Image (tube, rainbow, N blue to C red; front, side, top):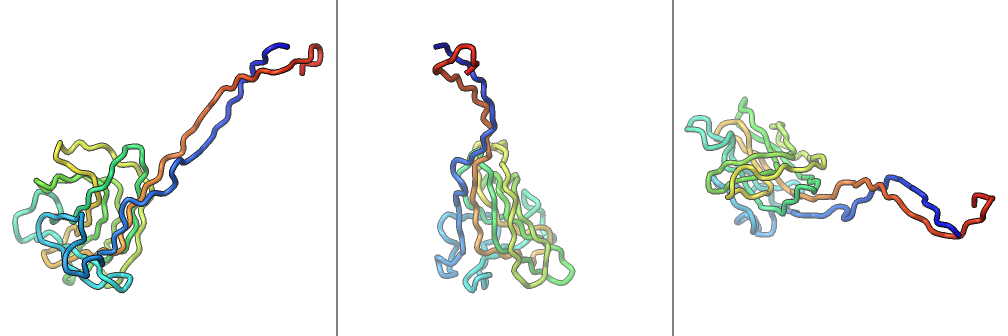
Length: 205
């Protein structure tokens, strides 16, 4: 009997959790009278409209370029806090469209990032954006992506922001059926295994 050392190496990929839903919002739980629990905003309040699936959607007004600029390039977004983990891969799906006055250019954004609700300042990472101003809903989906850690300050929260981009004060971006989920990245493992068993001398077995 003698011990045999068998160095084995292989690559194993796995995802421990699969997809996990962090937010699934259709804006219908309050019957179009107020934003559902968990949402907050700065600037003008959100407005309810007919949504993509026959219920309620919600819209935000763009920055009014005729008045002094707010702290960011956009009007105050709708914001919902979410759990954060630097190792998670996040994805957003949802319906959006933009409508505005004539030649005004506006963009809809559903964005993951960090926001300080006391100042209205925010930094962004993973996002889905539509610049269409035609009156139809468009289904959008972002890639899976990590989000950098917070460097905005101690009051910043991680979450999803729904915003209307550059335009005039009467441009709007509308949203419905917003979902945020995450998955874990694939991990490579290179193990070495020591085997112990019977040996047949002379046969190299």
